[in-house]
Length: 433
Image (cartoon, rainbow, N blue to C red; front, side):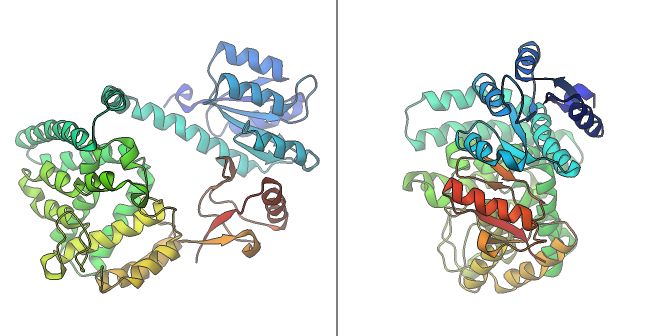
């Protein structure tokens, strides 16, 4: 990959020594680095070429960092904006945060690893944008038409279903022309679904390993584990036909009509791969993966013995993921909360042995660094050495601390002070051992 594709970072500081230090540090990332000795020079550079991420000092003559980044936010709102600030500037920093003019701030003196991680995460979005460009071009016209149409949800489903059927025909043709075409089909559909559901490749791979290890723990045959894996990768294919507001809104917050539409996604996914004979079992598991033992699931309200027990493995893993990702209830749950919910409903909605296997597997994979296993705490419960399992974001959408940040006495004190000044009650998710 060429340097230009890794994004452009603009460093703004009136001290040449600081600019040189930051520039040297960013060499390891391989991004393009621009420097400016003040806000005016920085604005001039941005008028000449696009910038993906800015790191600006707070105290500068003529124009402060907060003023400079406020102007950037007005002209280039998509640019990531980071403020370098000392402890003495905390009051000014809080003002900038409250006004929504910075994405986050870093303390001086800075920690090299923290700065590098913040920059990597910011530029990673640029890379994903390049990778998604082709898919966005294909879907942009359909999404625009959906917004313009003032039709009921049933009509939208019919239109999107027609699109899905067309995709199915293409996939059927690929299978007929390739000896091992169903594997290619799974990869194509899986990649499409990942992007539509806004899942990272890393997260998708971790979840795939989790479902396969669950199958092994529950003593499935190798061929069954493979089909379970395919079912996991393709379980959300039926959602591709839905509008963004249906896919990305938590199920509990959907209107009743939207929920009725949502209940069709297992049937749509089943229909889309049913003609690919090597995926017959995967198609069955997908159709039943939202059915619960007590009959309260969908789309067919199956009960107990009418549900394939392998589909219940998919159900347990999927509901756990959706609870943690914030797609099922009104807010995301910590992994311990999600497990608690599954255990509470084990034997009623879920296979008890599947829930028990997941409870055993998650801490093991967490210790191996292969899955997130976290719990929710308040600032009053913070302890030095705790590691954040998720980004800490304020109610205004400002990124305050990144995933992986390790708490110490200084950061804990500043968090409590910032919490009081913002009038918020921060909820932190920390890694469990």
